[in-house]
Length: 201
Ligand SMILES: [Fe+2]
Image (cartoon, helix red, strand yellow):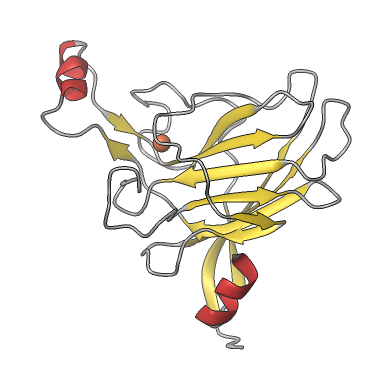
């Protein structure tokens, strides 16, 4: 194993079931079902996407506040160009998408790369409509989530990447208080590509 260190962003949120529950926001239109399922942790990039490594750790709690094991956390986001696999066929299957089962303590984690924001396609109907409304077509960088478990209401939400210039100027109005977690710089051990894939898929 290579013990070189690489810069990474380590960030943690708790999907806490307070009296209000975890903030919800839009699904967006680019979810694709069937991403590979992993237990506890997944690496959802294949190592070829440029960008700052991102590690996210969280815990899913039930409404009574107890950690929820075996919940399914589905996550997806755009790449360094703001493109989704859904439209960008140059990306490998299920790139930057994953499904993670929480462990006995309700925990999950995944590794990926920090996404960037994106814009509606230039010249398209969405851009023309937004032009008429006097609004730009940019979205800040974000990561989408579905969290589901039998007997529980499905959570549809996203987090935003703090510091994005459009953080509070999203044309989709999806940014929410409580969904902009703190980003922390961290150092992680760099494993060989083979070892990385072995622990993530
Ligand atoms: Fe999105």
